[in-house]
Amino acid sequence: MLENLHVKNLALIDEVEVDFRPGLNILTGETGAGKSILLGSVNLALGGKYNADMLRTGAQFGLVELTFSIEDEAIKKQLAAMDIYPEDGRIVLNRKLMEGRSISKINGETVNMSTLKDVASMLIDIHGQHEHQSLLHKKNHLAFLDLYQREKIEPLKKKVSKSCRVYQEYEKKLEEFSLDERERQKEISLAEFEIGEITEAGLQEGEDEELEICYRRMSEGKKITEGIGEAYQYTSEDSTGNASDYLSRAIRALQDVSSVDEQGGGLYSQLVEIDSLLNDFNRELSEYAKSFEFSEEEFYETENRLNEVNHLKTKYGNSVSEILEYCEEKKQRLKELEDYEIYMQELREGLERAKQEYLSCAEKLSAQRKKAAVSFVKEIKKGLEDLNFLDVQFEMRFSKNQKFSAGGIDDAEFYLSTNPGEALRPMGMAASGGELSRIMLVIKAVLAGQEDTPTLIFDEIDTGISGITAGKVAEKMHLIGKSRQVLCITHLAQIAAMADAHYRIQKEAKENITKTEIANLSEEESIQELARLLGGAKVTSSILQSAREMKELAKREI
Image (tube, rainbow, N blue to C red; front, side, top):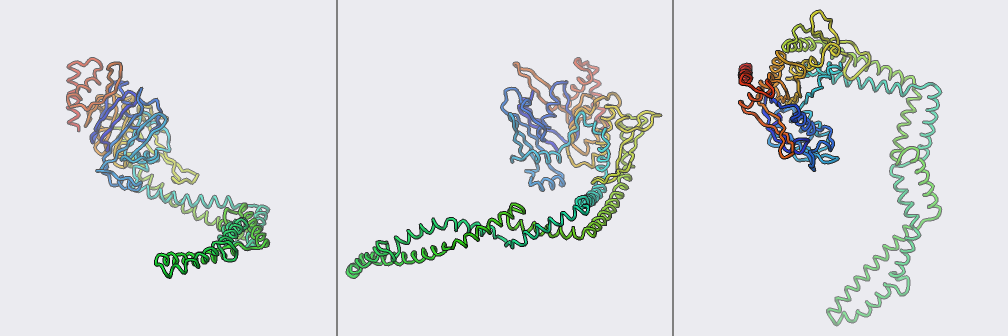
């Protein structure tokens, strides 16, 4: 669940920190006090879009930090798969916002925006003021049903998706391989030419690299041999005035000294060793020089072979290895072209098998969905009646999608009638904005035990409702709060009275500076806030008493 929210330097917020509790957390406050700013801050921490105008005037940076306690083992496994591990059972999402850029961190380690969003989606679900409009799109109706009975439906969906992928691969191969006779003969001729050209070249693995080295060696051979020759001249016995000649003279000069003086003998021995090393060096230098001996014919042959290999590289690959691989692919393609009818028949048979496998999986998925829809619709209808839809009719109607898709063959849509005598119509045509909001709340309540995200945020779910309906919505919110942590921004006292924890958001102006503050209310302060919601600017003793009674009644219902 979300344990702590810390916001700094965003819009009207100087610095705010608040601890949340399990169950139903209610946030109330005057219009313009900053409730939307607070929710926007949470969105930013979860990877929402940011621009520099969001920073508090004069601030160099903004900061949003969310601390979550992680208890669900499934979420721990998902995090571990991303190499993220809770520290002391907690995950901290941090986003520092600066002009033109932002830095995101998880438990102090910098992450990219994609990772931040992936982690956030596991931990929290925000139901904004206009999210109920997703009910207007029938593709979402099937998604709700799939989530309702996920344990049974998800394995079937995976099978359908896999079989659809196989079917589409066969379709693609058939489309790519469909040629008329003229095109086929043309491609056969080209493949035969390319295979012949590569085969005739007689390429060997790694040959191109060896040729490059040999060619460079030959190209630089003259310069190298001149240097070797000059070095040999200065060190070899074959020339006069060289190091070897002078070294021999020095040895002879010290030979007599070595017999009469110990130090002189040591120097003599060193000089003899140097002479031996120089002779070894000369032999190696001579062998090195021989390795650069080549004829003009050898150089010409090497150059021509390298040009041939490079020419093939420009056409078939960046290396001999790639060229040979290309040749094998062409041989396979040529075999397919020569056995065109056999290969096409194999593809058609494969496509038909894939089609039947797909339809079999899709029919099983469809049957399970229709079975699940019976109880799903029943629960939603009951929930709508609880929310003061007195004569509601609610159905989920299925039709068959003719196009194969990874989601199966089902098209499904909610149908609704809220008044006696009215025919059932598609959801988007039958429900008002306020009704859609309540329907979404019911769906969230029905799915509360199925969704993984441990924290739900509702932003003004009470739009367009009042009276008895508001009380029913409050009960439903508290019901969801029994299995999930709920944060709810509301203007209605009936909903606020059901709070397990009540927070007031208010705007204060001091010394020409406006700040948004948030306070965790005691029970008496919560009653005062309920009275404000009921009575507005002037709270009388009777309004205060009504607020107290509302709170007491809520306690008994809880």
